[in-house]
Figure 1 (cartoon, rainbow, N blue to C red):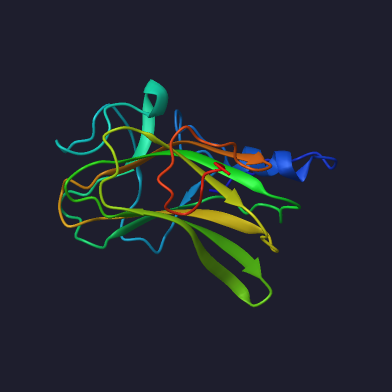
Figure 2 (figure 1 turned 90 degrees about the vertical axis):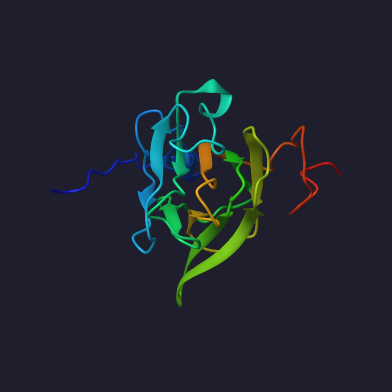
Amino acid sequence: QTDSCQLQPFEADPVEVSQTLVTCRFEDDFCQWKFDPTGQFNWTRHTGSTDSSGTGPTTGAGDSPFYIYIEASYPRVEGDRAGLISPYISKPIGTMCFQFYYHMWGGNIGSLQISTLQNTPSGIQQNLVWERNETQSKQWRDGRLNLRNIPYNFALKLDGYVGSGWEGDISLDEIFLTDGECPPTDWCDFETSFCGWI
């Protein structure tokens, strides 16, 4: 069996190609994102409530049917990680905005991390660029991340970590990559930036 590849026209805009490679709503599949083989388990694509009460969403973001999540119940143990990796993206000329929706609600939420995997001359370099820990809200939240000053081609890596118990389902949905700075959000927790409020 061979993996299929999507050919791009010679004159294709690298920014538009990158946006196409990363964008995913998870309605049909995982698009071009791949499971990280070094993780202890994988993200699950799902519709409706998760299998555990007291954690997880009831629908996808914006009432869409499907989303992805990590199931924190047995046989998972604290610290287990599920990773998802995007295709490699051409080195950006300017800032790019990575936008996504996340849901982190439950008594045993672990951690959600976003990293870049930069293809440097000395090998792949992983840099953590965004992180949230413990329960955040019983609703989908809009995450926006400005990707600046990345000197190499890179991939995005989404890691969900299991917390201390089964009420620890973490979900993601509606992933997009756009050119330019992220627009300000209506809500900000000021964990990593001012969210464009300056």
